[in-house]
Length: 263
Ligand code: ADP
Image 1 (tube, rainbow, N blue to C red):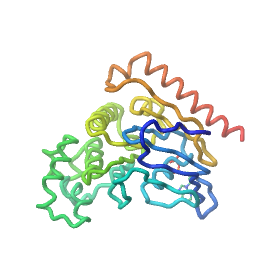
Image 2: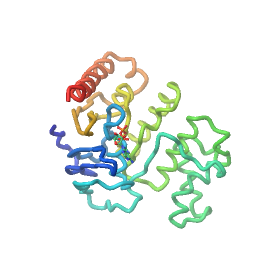
Image 3: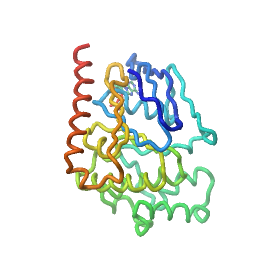
Image 4: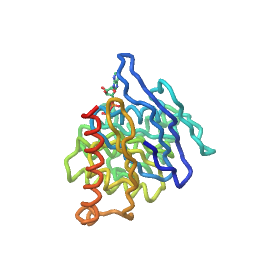
């Protein structure tokens, strides 16, 4: 499967990445993918097709068995701060306040609470939680906890945001709201986002490109541009154009899963 040539410069380029775990599971086989600067790319596929593994390899949390990752843009040197990672679970420290949780990545870089204050508070404001800086995670709703987790990923000013099914555990209303907030921030700040999901509807709403993956071994099955204009709002969610795109992407996903069942 040939992936789309990026029309803008690639921020990260995966070249023939394969990953085999110690138990012999081939999670990824020969995955090549260029992520263009400013793109909102979803990796869409059934459980076990290697989406999380691909994201973890991009974020340097694990290494590939073979292949390589390039960061072609000058000014981006992998030092652990060029990408922010948001997991499915908010993974907050229960004993620390909202401020303390968001401060953590800066604290690890040696910034005192005073030195970090402005950066932390600005980031909390972005996600609408500045008035909750002194609250503890147990006092927050699921959506608010996820906002804290997003703020923690953003506080270092990453160029690339990697999100692994961040809204999967949330109720639909909260998910829609966070979808809108994320799009607003993405459009405002021009980030590059790689978003893992198994939801056709969520991937179409958010992305300008969907990479459909197939399992066993994990690979790219289809690479689809989603050309609907931004800003996308709730009226897009109920539009015939959205429904048509969801149908097309759903067919591509079914074809990817069917190819797998036949193999
Ligand atoms: P996805 O995110 O699409 O659900 P994953 O990347 O989590 O898929 O997993 C891809 C495959 O690799 C699956 O078969 C999974 O069971 C396997 N896998 C993931 N992590 C490990 C691991 N640490 N050890 C062994 N197998 C793993």
